[in-house]
Image 1 (cartoon, rainbow, N blue to C red):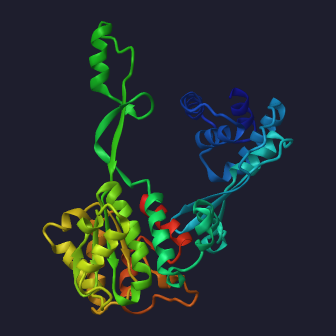
Image 2 (cartoon, rainbow, N blue to C red; image 1 turned 90 degrees about the vertical axis):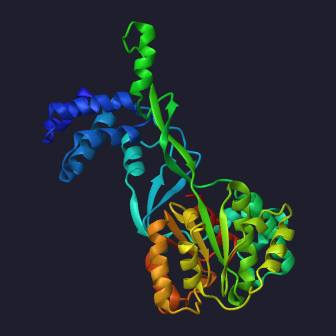
Image 3 (cartoon, rainbow, N blue to C red; image 1 turned 30 degrees about the vertical axis):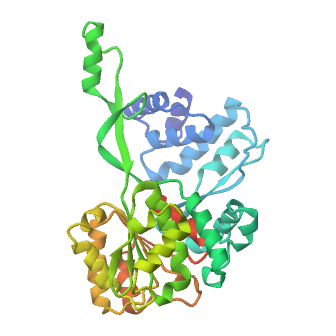
Length: 384
């Protein structure tokens, strides 16, 4: 550490005593496991000006060349590490060459590259879903739901119910004891000090407790969504059975169908729902339906702080202004709003007019959900 700080000062970087002290403390709190992690700890604490990054890189590489660090073993998961951030993708190459030097290894492994969503590999999710599906259904991963038979939809729906295992979580106001990390629990620390003569020998720590985040799902069961609504309802039933989510159907009216989806047999549950929703496969009043969910004194409480999933093609009998105002009110109450529109899978689709154009400004994620591969992204969005 002293050698690195000294070389940085000789190279013209302003590294004060306070920065060196913070660097030393950071090394104690999070000891680096490899040169890449050491690089980030050092650069975060020792460099205060973006213009000094190049000089720091040169000094850091020179120090590592002289330290004779052994090369890291070959990485098992080579390729690109892709992380999505607010509509962009951060792609960072992972090195996998055994004989590269420490400086070269750090240089290639630390610099992320920002690329647009259009540059993201289009088949990554599809391959993953094809691998997860059982062998008899693997060939259906990329097939649109409106091109599948009722039997194929039934099999995919039942498998989908078993695939949803995680539930979104939120941070609670309550705390729970933690063996490490988190913040110091002053009350527990002072209580334990009573057994050591009033000296706080052990610092007790705590972290926030997490709880399941509410999930509210609104499914369009109108005629235009007939080919997709069954598979979407299977996803909704899985979340109802896993964590008590709330489900509503939209057509000419809105109806709460959570109780019907709790039926033990998946097919009986969907069939029972079809019988109870008398206006199924008719028109759709999306704006009026969402407004009724928000204004209902019982239903509105389930929306507050929830992840809201809406499955609809956006063909609304209400004026666009009604849907726009309803979505704005929904976005203010909900934690996140996810809209699944199977029509958006088409290359020629443009949400420029009507209800969809009015709703999109208030949507956090807009997905297609038209196939099993696309449903994998929907599941990831709900779980996140």
